[in-house]
Length: 110
Length: 114
Image (tube, rainbow over all chains, first blue to last red; front, side, top):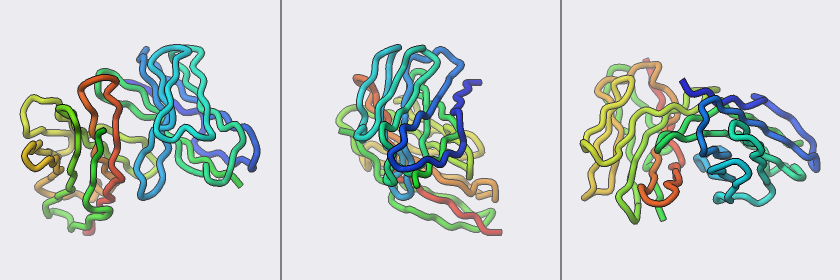
């Protein structure tokens, strides 16, 4: 079974802090994704990566950046956290067309 | 550009009755379509997928969906709801060309009462 592990289930951060969300996969997949999930909006793509050191903006990249130094690890960075970034963040990998998701990180910015 | 519309934000059924969750899609190319389920405090799990083979697709836990090109629909059904089906369901579309980005609907919360 594919395993996608997000480092934290719950995080509380202060406005203006730099926040790192980590995601690790164990199946050697090239493609990795970060989504945020908000009630009534479904999942929206923030950034994705199709190879080490490669990254592409998704639909809502503003206020975020990413890092992919190793194939198995994809990090989402909130440069200066704001309250409107309070959300559930989901990491995913993909093999052919099927996506595999982590458990999610519920981030609260106060 | 692709998009999906889930027509109901909430659906309530009684245990043992049929389930219908509706999804319409828009795609410039021949799409691949998926249904994912998210149980409370859990990650998303693939229920089923359509990728151009049979139009009636069977998934896990007794769910199935039918691809209807003429209606641009991919509705999810189950003959008899179980309490454990209570969850949020997402319809997802992906083009089969290019990078094949996944586009999610806004979700339908299924409530199952005894």
